[in-house]
Amino acid sequence: MKKLTSVALATLGLVSFANAQATKEEVPAKKADAPAKPATDKLAVGSAAPAIAGATWVQGEEVSKLDKAGELYIVECWATWCGPCVAMIPHMNDLHKSYGDKGLTIVGMNVWEDGLDKVKGFVKEKGEGMSYRIAYSGGQKSTFADTWLTPSGTKGIPTAFAVKDGKIIYIGHPSDLEEDVVKQMMGKDFDAAKFAKEQEAKKEAEKAFHAKLRPLMQAQDWAAVKTLATTDPLTKGKDLGLRLLIHANTATNDWDALSALATEVKAGKFGEKATANSLVVTFLDAKTDDKVKAFATKLIPMLDTKALSESEDVMQRMGYARALFITGKAEESQKAITSVVAFINEKYKGNKGAEEFATKLASIIEKIKGGSFPPMSELR
Image 1: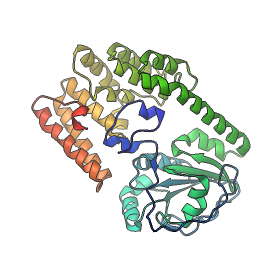
Image 2 (image 1 turned 90 degrees about the vertical axis):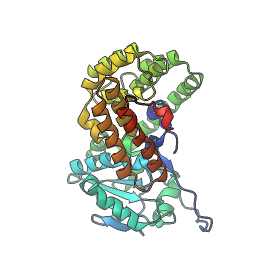
Image 3 (image 1 turned 180 degrees about the vertical axis):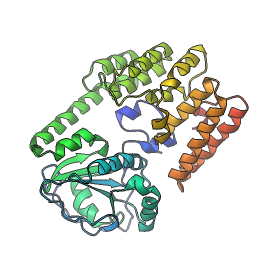
Image 4 (image 1 turned 180 degrees about the horizontal axis):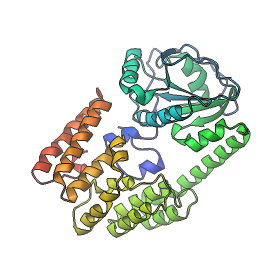
């Protein structure tokens, strides 16, 4: 499994099966007999959007030219084997349901995957959970790869292309296409050039932040990490800052600080999107003592159990199950682990690594019955 690559997730330090939900998965190595492709013009923000050609439409009406005046098109590249792509499906589906009849067209373009039947089966299984247009590019060697992926330098997925009035206005991770951004793009007064400059400035800010954070993480200077999380504009009062603080306080076993964070999350200090669910992973390797028990007791009533049950974050579900056990709710903990195993087996059927992890995870059920809940380190 690949390690987490986004700062927001990488700082959790969780190296396991759940890392399949990292920011991006890289393109699979091409087959040895793949012919060399001719050079093509570079595709970037501001470029005319190529036609979508050579694709097989699995679901929804075919779209070839993305040039309808005022229409916003999002071409989101994904694959069934890509954990981060699967994690993005609910987000794309929500956008489609909210704006599909208001000028937004989403095309889920399956790429780098040899097997049309596999894609059809996956989409059918998703049902209403993946209700937007779906197309199959044709595998690793495809016209779409030659006209979109290679010219844009795309080497990882999920990657989204946003197109308006026939021009590409965004290339990047689909998670950045939040509802407010999409609404901005759909607006009649949307300024593509201004938006492109803002996106470039954002990338530069993120690059500078990474440069500051990386050496602190490597040196395990947790005090400095916490200072950065609470002062840098990219993290102060935001979910990313919360995740950094969780990681730093967990690394120093500071459960009093984690309890304070839980209170701040409840008060909305880190924004509406930050929830107590972010804190549950702290239990994965925690040694149970009075402070840990006190924290778990305080945290569990704050959890949005509906959001947790719908989440595709395996580690989050694991943390919740262990928190239940720590607080004396062994039977509920056992049910939670059982649901995680079922989730993995359903969502990642045929994935050898996932199946092996699910088997190890199932062993926890018997240990819970025996009065113990092993740390995640024993399952890695």
